Picture 1 (cartoon, one colour):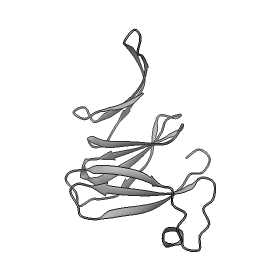
Picture 2 (cartoon, helix red, strand yellow):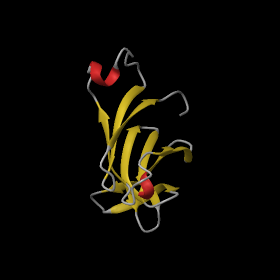
Picture 3 (cartoon, one colour):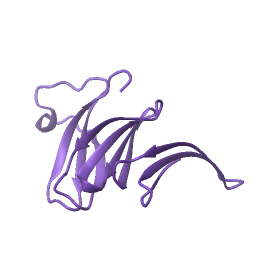
Picture 4 (spheres, helix red, strand yellow):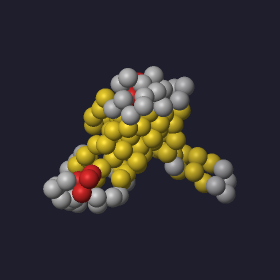
Length: 126
């Protein structure tokens, strides 16, 4: 299970036993700003939307911050939504073919009026 601690500006990964109500925290990621939204790309990658409109890309396997994106910097509210766009529409992709490891992400923030579309390409180790 993945959950955030807003006040401590961190993300925790834990194994939770529902029967005994025990949790074993296995990883902790310290964020640059307070987390507002979590999006797991795959079993190895996590996107964390934060206050100030930043998106942090974390590697779960290496426990490291891979990159920080200034997604909605005009927002004081932080990232409110990250969505994987499944559409194959020409209006989104144009002439570019959708390859394995390539996808479109939509992001939004309560503090701004626009949404943004990002082309994400995951390569080995990232």
